[in-house]
Image (cartoon, rainbow, N blue to C red; front, side, top):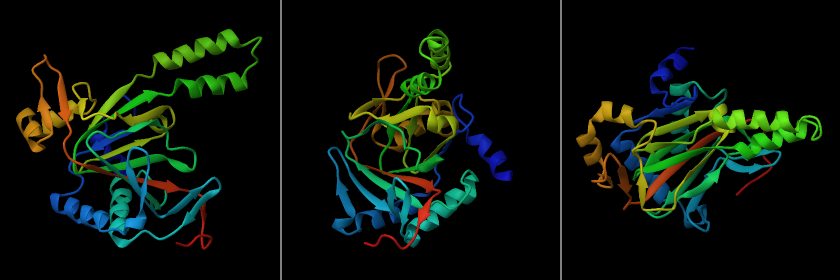
Length: 262
């Protein structure tokens, strides 16, 4: 597909389906989206222990999506993501908007089986570092359920160890207005999360070289006031001081209509 060829230039890291598109939306687009998000009714916000969120597109249930239409300001964005990337087999129908204060993050997690195994995350407002960790417990569980404990324990342990050795933790520097997409193995075999910390290291981010080639170090460090370079060798950190908004855009394949109304 032409989209897949076009997307190849945005591939980062060692996984075949991990993509990072810098400046996916313009500064004006960011202002437009943030205005809509901030003007949403207070009842649209749900407050969790360490962040607030908005749910758009309906409620995800164990049997699928109890759907609602996305508002135009979101459907225009999701349509652009689908058409630009070519990685979603059907139109994106669910968007979760998270608000993160400077010291807030999200624990390592998976998005789960309800969604087609691809997620697109648009970052707005402030940078952050997203960490990916191999989900070895999942693999160990899968193997133990499919093999006899008596005859295959040793083989299972060797296979699990081989899997761990071939899956490495990594991080991605999420700059404002950028789009991160991860699919298939990057979706199913890894947990992703953001540390609850104002200061986050990004010197080992798998997209750092691409960002430096695109912007240069000085421009990158000056593009957002939070991004700074430390004096400790080559270590680079983000000192977060502003609110970050993320739009997690996903596709729920099983949809139930007219079963839920707000």
